[in-house]
Length: 133
Image (cartoon, rainbow, N blue to C red; front, side):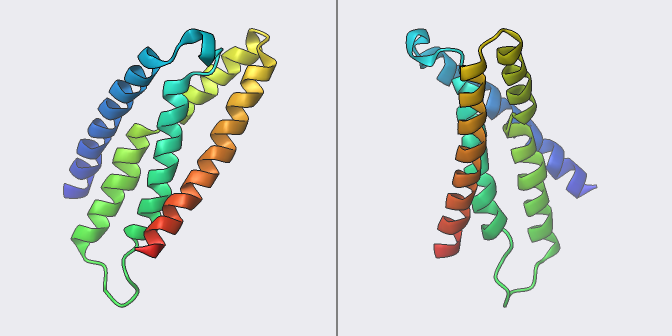
């Protein structure tokens, strides 16, 4: 039961942080510069990818130290709960679909490229940083 509650609690924190951070970013981006890119969603996803890569390695623990039940619960709560609530891949998908539907092919392609290539690159960067610590 503690695992489920930990996931739920971390998920709520992730969802709220995603909402407020995405809105904060969107309020600060000049529409003339942003075009049709949903910058709040994009940046939250990229931050989430970096965090996932970092935590993936960092929370795996050292091979010489056994994983405790608390370590396992923390890993599941952060990776599944917090990052599951924080990242917005479903929102990204619908927003990109809307761009395609509205004929904004270049913006949609740019959004896909930045999100996917940037996301993978930042997951790698987070993983690499975590390994170096």
